[in-house]
Length: 116
Image 1 (tube, rainbow, N blue to C red):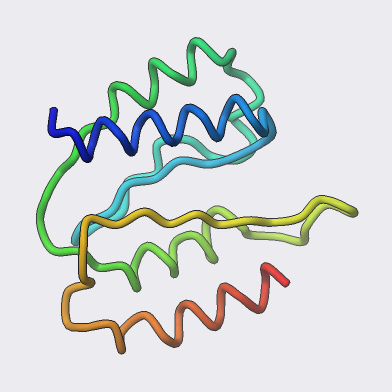
Image 2 (cartoon, rainbow, N blue to C red):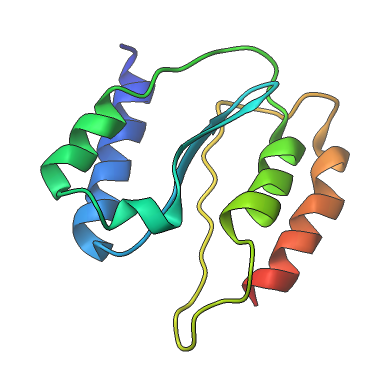
C-alpha cells in the first residue's frame, strides 16, 4: 500500500475516534461505491470500523468528483436532517477531477445548500 493511501486510512480512523458519531464511507472513481451508510455506522465497534476501513481498496480509474458529490447529496444525505445535528462532508481525492474542476461547481453548490 502506498504511503499516501495508508495515510488516508489512518486519517479516517482518527476522525472516527474523535467523533464516534454516525457517518458514511464511500469510494469513487468513474463509479461510486458506498461502503457504509449513515444508519449502519452505529452498528459497528471502533475495531470493526478500523477493519472495514483497512479493507477498502483503491480502485483507480477516472476521478469523477462530480459524481461522488451527487451521490452524497442523493444517497447519503437524503431526507431531512436531524434537529441540532450538523451535516458534514469530507471529500478526499487522489487528484484532479476528470474533465476539469468546472465539472464540480454545480454539484458542490447543490450539496452546500443541504449542508447549511
